Length: 180
Image 1 (tube, rainbow, N blue to C red):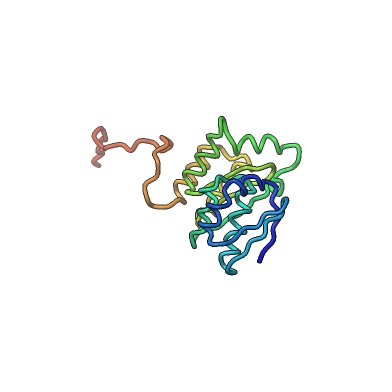
Image 2: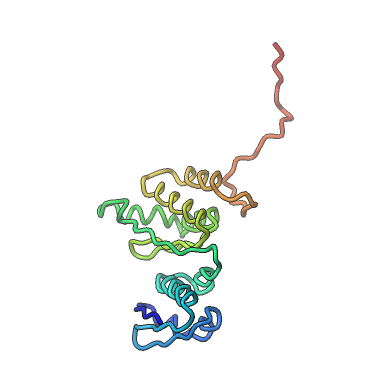
């Protein structure tokens, strides 16, 4: 039996039946305190899922933590910047209309949420490492295009959604051959 405190307990209450079914645990909710009852492994997974929901992740994204290879990590932005640059750094990570955050999420194959001064990441260990590094590069001031290139190089080999970030490869039709 595990007890955790949730600030967004309303979201848990609204989805209690679904969460209990998906996580194979019993949830008792009193005020902001959530008691998780089940097998130790299921309790641990349920705790991580509830932490992710409390962080701000949508329920389906948080439930992906159930997969054995998926993890939930939190990156504190304030560890990498000073107070005066904090709002600028948050803006760089979010991007115009959330485009930068969505692009990093897509290229790293992770679910990413920004809440206050923390960045929550759900994904496979290697993907999380790449997403964290990309966010650290943005915090340091690296151009967005260079961060996206980094993710494309260090990402997984399966084809990704084409975001139009790569240059078109030449077909070689107009190349001159120099014979010496």
